[in-house]
Image (tube, rainbow, N blue to C red; front, side, top):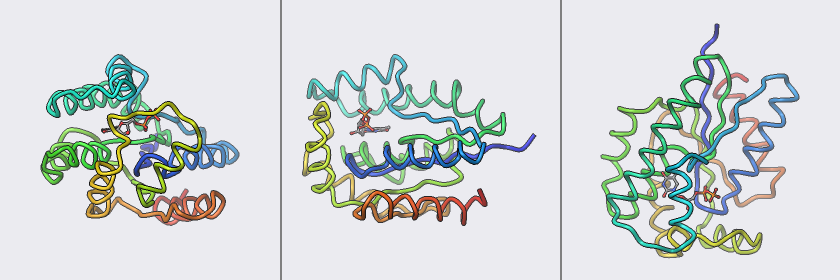
Length: 200
Ligand code: TYD
C-alpha cells in the first residue's frame, strides 16, 4: 500500500487556513481521495484543556502551556496521524508543530530548538502551507466573524511576534501562500501548490 501524505495548514489566527483546508478537502473528495481532516488543538482531553485556558484568558506558565500542546500532539500523532499516513490516506491538519514553534517561540522559547525537538519526535509533514497575512488583518477577521475570543493567544503584540517566527522559518517542506487575497484566489494557489509539490 502507498504511504499517505501529511499536509498541514499553518498561520496566524484569521489567516483563512481552516477555510482553505475545507476547500481542499472538498476537492480531494471530488477526486475520490478521501482525506482525513483533523486539527490541533484536538478535541481530546489536552486540547479541551488548552481551549478552556485560551477562552478564559488565563495565563499559565509558558512551560506548562508548551507541555499541554506537546501532550495533545503525542495523542494526535499516535491516534490519528500515523495510522492515517500508514493506511495510505492524505491527512490534512489545521495546525501542527510549526504552530508550537511560532506561538511558543513568541512566548520566549527558542524557535530553532522547538523545531529541532519537533522534527526529532513527530513525523515531518510532506507539505506545510503557511498562510501569510498581516496579524492585525487576521485579528480583524477573527473579530468580524464573531468567534469566541481567545485572549490568551489573540493579542496584537504577541501575534506580531508569532508572525515574525513564521516569516523566518525555512524548511524544504514549507510553502508560503499569500493569504491577503480573496478566498478563491487563495484556494487556487493552494491547489496549485499541492499539485506541484505532491503530484496530487
Ligand atoms: P485555533 O487554531 O485558533 O483553534 P480553534 O479555532 O479551534 O480555537 O488554535 C487555538 C490557539 O492555539 C491559536 O491561537 C494558536 C494556539 N496554538 C499554540 O499556541 N501552539 C500550538 O502548538 C497550537 C497547535 C496552537
